[in-house]
Image 1 (spheres, rainbow, N blue to C red):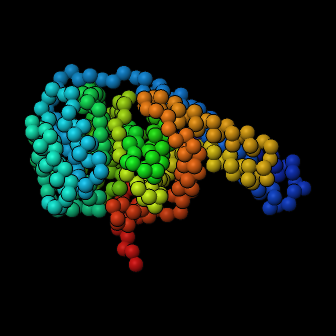
Image 2 (image 1 turned 135 degrees about the vertical axis):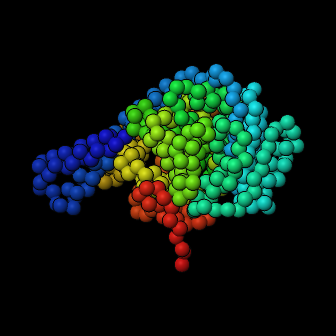
Amino acid sequence: MKALAWLVCLIGLLLASGLIAFEGRLQGEHLILVALAYLCGTGAALGVAYTVLAGALIGRFFARATSEPSSFPPVTIVKPLHGDEQTLLANLTSFCVQDYPGPLQFLFGVHDSEDPALQTVEQLRLLHPEAHITVVADARLYGPNRKMSNILNMLPEARHDVLVFADSDVSVDRRYLRNVIGELQKPGVGLVTCVYRGQPDPGFWPRLSAKATNYQFLPGVVTGLALGMARPCFGQTIAMRRETLERIGGFAQFVHHLAEDHAIGEAVRMIGEKVVIPPFTVSHACVESSVAKLVAHELRWSRTIRTINPLGHLGSSLMHPLAFALLAAALSGGAAWAWPLVGAAVLARLALMMQSDHALRQDYSDLWVLPLWDIVSFLIFVASFFSTRVIWRGFSFTVGADGRLSPVQDK
């Protein structure tokens, strides 16, 4: 994706140079508009090519076979909780009904002993009295990343040497743990993480958030992996052995990181162990109930990626062929060459949507929403370049070049 981004710039410069040579009679302002139109047209054409490639790769990624474990070691499933999420009980239940014959410990943690999430945990105990459930309520904070502080408070209660960390808004199918442990048992593997699909709460904005996950984030990750340009690690699943956790120096070093999952993956790679992603998804609850919450979430994600991987973030501009095509049409004054690009971009994005749904084995829905989201997501992408400020759980931070958080005091 980095190489494609540089290619966009190079082709755009060549086109601009050609325009200067062949259209020297044009006024300077008009020449700039024409040059920009051709540059956007080039971005649209490359974006369409990227989209077609992503559609092919996403099918290939999920066509691979999953792994079966050679043994079933005891596992501690670590889940930091915060608040009473709408689907929390269903999410936690999906971990309690795993097709996994080995011993399981379910370790839940909160900062506040009055956190309403604990009521859901009590419901879980009633539904699954056989489950080995441990709860930690500890208010200690070690940095601005409250999730990592929660996990640090929980870890002394983890009984087993295989640890699976999973966010509270994640649900999984019954074979999830078997497949994760099967991958972790392969030679040289130090960490297993999972890509995820969006599972929307009721309402329009959660559905739009799920579209962003399923048709932008997920194809981008799969394509980046296939081209060797992505090194992801996602908090929706981080499975590792206690030995690996100790070799990277523990989790205390990540309490100042916003993208702590990315930093954990990099730390595992630095000790010479592999981070692998199996060919299945977990489900991530999309709960953004308003346009403001949705934009804030997407902007936080986009700015985080920009700070930790600037060139990769720039290359992700190719995920927006429709926006570039519309800009080309507008800047060129509706030139005849621009409108076929608009049509090609719409068709390519809709084809990717259907290919993703087919790979994820889910029904097509809300086809009309995708072009709308493509425009909104492009505006968020542009906005990500103008600040490093993010809002996370009601607190304001700036994100440094190393992905570390610094609190902002609002006036």
